[in-house]
Image 1: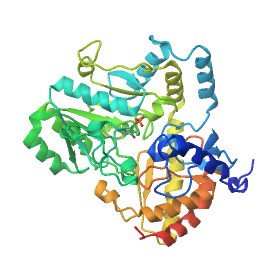
Image 2: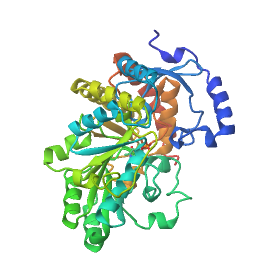
Image 3: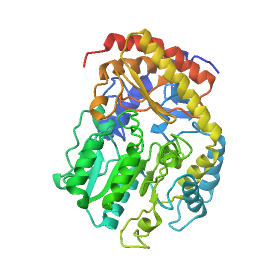
Image 4: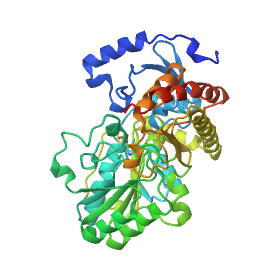
Length: 445
Ligand SMILES: *Cc1c(COP(=O)(O)O)cnc(C)c1O
């Protein structure tokens, strides 16, 4: 195997041809806006296969993958044990519409790692947060939802206000198609702002059903909560009988074995009332979950009156992939992901410093991102100072050198247990030229 993937071919003809075909049948040529290259220029690479830390596109070009399917691929691509378990599950039929064993075992694994007492499986993070909000409203009999600017919780109507990366990348301030009546019960506050929270609770505490927050925001770039901030939310909610929903769709089973809560509530001695999970727990398949206090979850149908359902919820192939992934996600896996991240954080900072590009690297457990602006970044307003023109040049240079970063300046760089010395070295080798490209393009916003 060559250690210089970019020497395979420099052609992007096949990706361009597929993108043209895609654009005739799909809006923007992609099935999720975050995959588009609108913010960075160029043509999205159509990936034909992936193995460990490597992506191979339809032109036969290899890239070190730092997207990781936007989080799920903690073990790397096509992990042999996950592939074998999935093949075995597929051969037994793909969906029955009846209860199965792997969904129980996956729920047990989630309960074992987190403070939730009961979980309900769904098929996407969006469904998880949408259902958790409904349950919080049904349980409390109240309607107001508090969220933070820059936190993304899926494309739930009521939560698409100041919702982070996908919208920030495309400069959409919220979105058409969501009626004012869907967001008028949503209060949006600046992240990390205790005063703003205190004020809204003082004024409207008795109307608040829940506060939903990313356990550690990763959808405006990584913006960790200030020490004690999540605990403060939990405590404030308790004083008025509102619920705290901690969205761990991205951080769950990634930031640490127990998600971000393992670095936060587990040490401080508090737990959210409800939590949402997705990404890693699906092992690359559509599986997600919400869960929490048993007395709250008891309000969910068929045990209680709050309706929620799904034809493919707890799908046996998806839950087998997720269960196998979590069982393989050992302490060693997290230690390796942390160590790879540490090397890349230092490498990126050194290259950007040498090229004179303002930057700040921020982390939450094993997750990290590189902002092209001076730090620290504490909230969405701060994140928007990042130099998107410089990032576009940086991204394009990395891609041409065989490293696939997220095509957005507002995302984490996702490493895996499969990122070995060869993959890490390929990233380190590409960073200096990319940093110089960023220096040349910076400030053009
Ligand atoms: C990805 C994400 C979601 C949405 O999950 P989907 O599976 O894309 O619907 C929700 N919340 C957070 C924090 C996420 O990162």
